[in-house]
Image 1 (cartoon, rainbow, N blue to C red):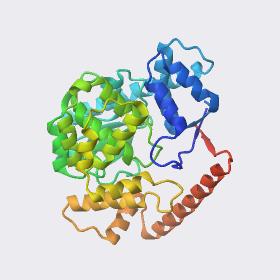
Image 2 (cartoon, rainbow, N blue to C red):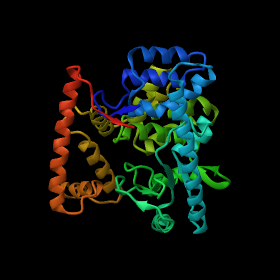
Image 3 (cartoon, one colour):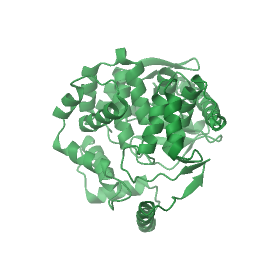
Image 4 (cartoon, rainbow, N blue to C red):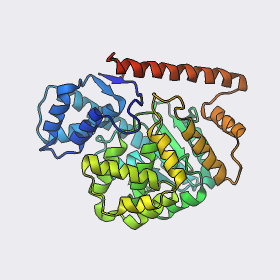
Length: 389
């Protein structure tokens, strides 16, 4: 089975093929087989986008519940079992680190994958994960990094500069240690909003905290449309299932307030509109209108770049990187400058020297030209490149 290299030809939204897989994964067991059969008519399970591949464990649970016996079920079962096994290993490692952090008196909050898998998907194998996400208060971040490193976790390239650090264990498992919510929200005040409303959560008998479901939904929508390294698909089932399975727990007044605090009203409005139009998500009447009424011009400009940041455009993700840098500097009461932005890029790209920075820029220009060429290949009907997964 191969995964197609991620390439943003259709922008930030899932493609038509990916939308069909999402619909099958979110459908009832009675409807899932027909939707999956429709996908198989025009697609090859052995040639998948990375985002589609990550939805196969959830899709498997629906088809298995329907007692579906297609020839491809053995492959789907394999992806589910692999996801379950890896997530068990990751959960055990994260729980060990939570214990170690607590021993040093460090408060912790779990984000994203693990709480979603256990509270919303209610199946550790159904929600694929690349890493575990632990948040600590900013004042404890230095000590928390020491704890991870003392336990053998090694820093990887700091591709989330300023708000988190990624670590890898000797077993190849990864943990992202956060002290801010996202790279777009490097503010203790914003983090405090999340911490103060968080809920008790338990992982392998280790007590910690997790976001309440309202804040989790806002974060899922904003984080999903900010992601840069892969085609954004998984946020769709994450957000849909939060709304479907925790409907009574979502405080929509708080939802609007938190979206505003995160300066994400425009992004959240666009995401909810998409979910409602494509998957009939249970969005209460008036919520999107309320979000749009809170949207300012700068958010609309940001969203325009976000929704058009594809391989077809020469600017790529640079405008969004500038926005992230600008916001972080403003949060620190500093003046954003072009020189500071270049320094930020140097840190983001983990380039050790300014001489190396020149080479890195040239490398990225060549890669963007390659993406342009690949986009034209697809326009002309030439098969895309693939890599083994």
